[in-house]
Structures are given as structure tokens and as C-alpha cells.
Image: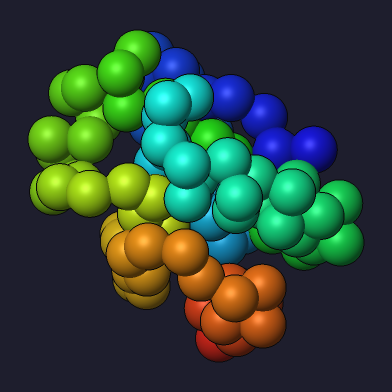
Length: 105
């Protein structure tokens, strides 16, 4: 299960992490986000120990969405060593998300 991440803990858990980190920018009212949620949770389980997977609610954390230019959701950004390296916008296949993470391992 992917954990919800708040703006106050973002730098410590994402930018200072030496593993790849997938961040799902989402919202509770977003239909495609709800459709993607089981895929994100499954990915979090499968990547446990190799990569971290988090969800950021854009309504609760508008500063993070603005900081990373999230204009539509879902937006997935994969970080490595404090930098945004990969990005996918909209409903995305699990294989695509796995590839984004595997490239950075």
C-alpha cells in the first residue's frame, strides 16, 4: 500500500532518499486517480525494499503540486537522488511505471 505523503515530510522521504521514489500526485475526487490507485498500491508492495512509492493529495498539498508543475492528475513523478527523473501524466499502465523505476535502480 502506498503511503500518503505530506509536504512537511516530502524532502526527507523523497529528495533525501537514495532509492528511486515514485510519487503519485492524486486527489480523492479524480476518477482516473481512483482507477490507478490499485496499481500504485500493488507497485508499492512489489517494489518494497527496492523503491519507495508515495501518494500526494494535491488538494492537501498544493505547494508540492505547484513546485513540480503538476497541472493535471494523475501525474506520476519518479525521483532519484533528489531530482525528478521520469514523469507520466494520466492513466498509465503498470508496466510503464515499472520501467520508469527500473531505469533508475
